[in-house]
Amino acid sequence: MRAGAEVTIYLPEPLRTYAGGIVELPIRAAAIRDMLGRLEQTQPLLHRNVCDETGAVRRHLNIFVNADNIRDRDGLDTALKRGDVVTIVPAVSGG
Amino acid sequence: MLTIGTKKGVFVAEAPKSRRSFALRGPFGPGVPVYSTLIDTRGTPRLYASSCNPFFGMKVLRSTDMGKSFKETKAAPAFPKEDGRALINIWSLEPGSEPKDLWCGVEPASLFRSLDGGDSWEMVPGISNHEHARKWNPGNGGLCMHTIIRDGNRMHLGISTGGHYLSEDGGRTFRAANTGVGAGFQPDPYPEFGQCVHKIVRHDAAPGRLYMQNHGGWAEWTGPGGPRPDIGVLRSDDHGKSWRSIAKGLPTDFGFPIVVHPHDPDTVYVLPLEPMTRTCPGGAPAVWRSENGGDSWKRLAHGLPKKQSYFTILRDAMTIDVLKTPALYFGTTTGQLWIGREGGEQFDCLFEALPPIHNVKVAVV
Image (tube, rainbow over all chains, first blue to last red; front, side, top):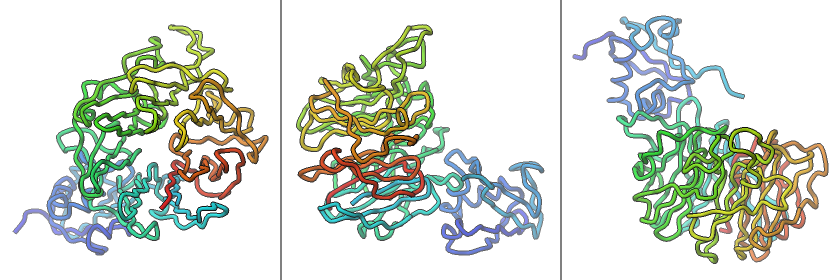
């Protein structure tokens, strides 16, 4: 059994096509960085849409743990606990 | 058939050979900027479009049904993880020598190749890891490889701002080939590399000849290095090893696209813009045509607005078809698509209100 808390990733509509159409993706991870690493292994198409080739989260995406932007917590080191919902949201930008 | 890459997706327009009117469909990849398209007429036609998604990264879209639908290829170009660079944009798609062979120029300026129609990509190290590559700087549009020209075993690349690079071994190795190509934005007017090349074209019937729209507009420069008049429109007759100005007679040597006539290598078209505003001089757009390889120029504006038109035509937004009497096409940043019938003698607006246009390609299919 994998280490880390059982959490759920909520996927916005444009990302669902890269995860077999699902809306919510259950995953085990101790922190956001760990979660992204596991996504790279298990959901490479989805991961490519969230992170660039260097592994950095794409510039115009925000990641929330429950209601908190990870930018306002510990960034990629933001810890996850059982039942957390991680939401990946395109930034409000463009024109 | 036209592919029209816009700020909000790619459109496809079709017409019979009379080109009297075009039927439009799209947008495909809606809402996402498209900077490059390709109508690949080798075998069953395939259409490609780069879909440059600012949120979720770059995609390559492919259509196998003449532009009725597009699907993502299995992969887009991507730098190796250890490289440290990340793809920002896809600026050019060109066919290679084999049936499913594609070349792709990207931002930050690098070259990729696919041998399976865009489903997998390999970085081309000869230019992507060139000793100059980490010294190039982005222009206003980004550090982009926008031009890929194949000529047998030669390959010409245009990079803004990197300059013109030439390979004579099929793309394995490259060298800067910028003798005579000026740079206005640095004290050394003629550096080895680092020029802001905007577009390069060639013609099969004139071996060794190339035309270049370079970043001009430096005739009045009074800083170090002095003025650099007429560095914007250039010609080479030795496969790009040296270049000379052919800008004399144009209202300004600044512009983005340059197009060569499909049946006459002496006939070349540019679309001059005011260098400071990058808009049509005096608000009156015009294409300028030379029929003698750049020795003299004629203004073509019949049918175009005579005033109050301050749009920009980007580097890949002008093209020409290959019919017996070819038509020019150009798209504007204000979303108009114009056709210049009879080689540019008579302009008509095909579409008046598309999203801002980045790219126009045409093919007879």
